[in-house]
Length: 465
Image (cartoon, rainbow, N blue to C red; front, side):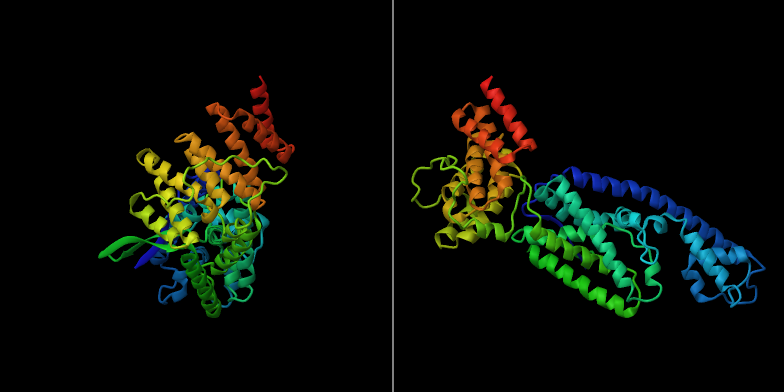
């Protein structure tokens, strides 16, 4: 049986710049590594053939069994022309070390016993084989792409590389307690850095459902959903168990210590590093902060929220999933209703051209009952972006609501970006231009010398012109 994650219930399918660069670099590097592996294999084959055909090497002796497990040693034996004995061991080890230093894996993979600052970074772009690469990229697609969307380009790159370095250092520490040969095993692969993205994903996307693919031999296959906390929590626990078993056995074939170290740092940074403006899902902590009274800082002129008539009416019904969500709302489980409504709307936005009417009705209801639902500001902001071309008026309402919620939770990033996005939409739609101007002026005041302030200033000059 085999199971692995393939997506989430809020995944938009888009791969952003940093993720594309990382994937492309891993694939590009692996072409060179695989060519080098082919070269090594060819040399091994030559050595093996020579061993069996040479009449001078151990003609009447059975070669040591462990000789076949060390291809580089076999190469040296072929060159030396005699069997290993007490007089040739030192020479053999010297030749082995020299050959190892010439391979790409040993030169740029992280070898704990031969510490190199460069390999702290290069190892995470190398992989042992194509299956290793593909497996890592699947996990990266599930978690890494989401974290770039949450943190933005530069923050994501910084955290991703930082977790990769932390993973290597964790493996370095673990190798000190493993067998004598563990420190000489090269560590390659992006799994440590990806484990960091997984740890951060658990913290920042705790309510997201992970789509799991499973296959049982050739008999049955399919998918099911599991919460990110349960799936990646189980994965982390399994890595801890394997790490201690590996340590007890005294070897280090798989870098479980790197997985544990990367994941642990990801958990920490998931709590410490603030999200960028295009975040799609936020943490439980942000949701709790939104329960405070929504008041915009520095002004009593709160953003306009679209007026929906009948605010005290029963929530609308539309489709079985939506009906179930509103029934949950009526029962008083507002947080669970918010989760169901958000999940349904995100699913609708995957194919908006076929769900235009449902999206409009659903977003109207959500905004209408936002006081109780407490949808996080980053989610409202993301919906506003998704609706900008589909329904500009609804998009303006989302950004207005996001600004109010962000002001309450002191999320400056989402607050100023929501104001700017709402102003842009109002200008493009030629509606409420005075309010658009007010928003832009506040963005300039909030952002100082930032890029967003420059864009807002340019928009203001365009309005005056």
